[in-house]
Length: 352
Image (cartoon, rainbow, N blue to C red; front, side, top):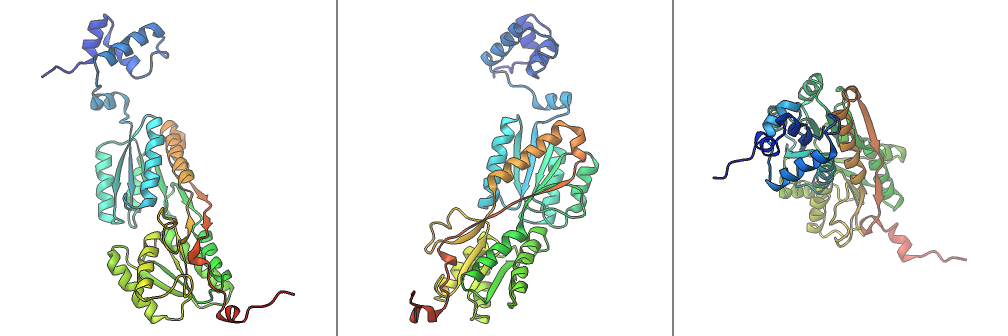
């Protein structure tokens, strides 16, 4: 087996000190007034012999692992995978690697993953937190570790949070259904007290109250399978046959809801108008295409990594707690272009 090249081997070969090699490899050549010529000579030789630094030893010297831990609800979800991809790309440009993990919205799993990341001594944390891990997040902050929460946060924990206007987006979605002729509008959401779901419910209820409508809310547990969600929604629709509009609090609830609607031979949007929260890449391909509230994924991703890099670069920035709220956008497609009234089709009004 070929012997691994060490810093001392490089120093011996080039007839310089190991300290000088270390300074150059750690980007401190200019700071230590090492000539550009010598820096180039070392870096060229390092490339020639394919030198691989000892990451553990390096982290012990610098106190940095150049690794960021990222916890999301489900990395296979299009929203979280899109966020993770952009964050990873931007982190790599800044010299960091990302460790991604899914919590499955499970408190015990989230706590175990945070413990693992702490043991690996990652430099910072990007977390879409599960319910019940407030103390774990607070401990990270107490230990002066850089933390960014996104998508949701805990109101009682002083963190840097990057979220969207969930209440405003939900209100716009429900209002759009109302303005397109729906007057019996339901909301299908998760059985959750997390801030983003609470805010989406508030937005829906605001539209209902402002217009004197009756609310119809179905709360579904997070951990149900697609088939179980379809069954719950099917039963809900049978119980409320007069519904003419539904606002879904997530994209996967919308997909389950469309299957339940199809099973009942209801037409979208003829019988029932649909809007989902969080656009999905496939919504434009469905027939009919699905209207949705789109989250600013690019802006959210860049804000998340930029704020974390700030905290990693400046110890004073670690103390800053702030909630950044980004706007959403309604993407109007076929599913919400609801027929105003049957009478308007039977007896069209003639224009003078």
